[in-house]
Length: 200
Image 1 (cartoon, rainbow, N blue to C red):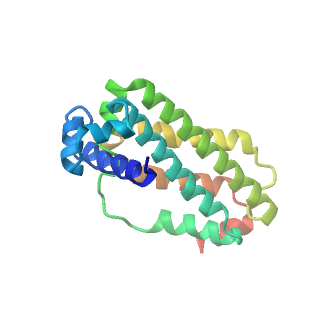
Image 2 (tube, one colour):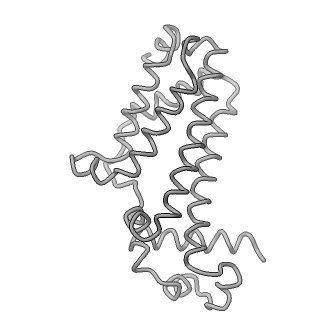
């Protein structure tokens, strides 16, 4: 069984779900897009339900890889600058939340809740690592409670995905919301030296 082919199916299905929603995309639609028979599809996935589960797992794995790559940067000040650039750079106001979120919450709540929990745990882990490294570098306040802080902001980020409809109904979008949350996080935990780096 080819892992590349499996990943290709997940990617293609994700693009279809993004554009059309989960409920309106059938296995036949996915196979047609792939130029693949249903018999071949079922070699890789037993059902659409399993495909959705694997798609969500791949999403979390991608998030983990990005966070790991950021935290492996040797110079901690470079990490602070990276967050600064992300917060201050204006981006096109486009919808970043997949259209499939609504369908996930309504029709696949078990998968969605597992995805939310895994996302929360992953973000909490890397925010805590960020704080630990920052304290060692002298750029994060030493008196920060890393457990409380990482829990608080991981919850903010994961709740933002759950409640994105409310955010967007007020004329905002998820990237804007997350940039504001990250700005608050950075200003709340950085030391005086870290704040100078962040603001300059």
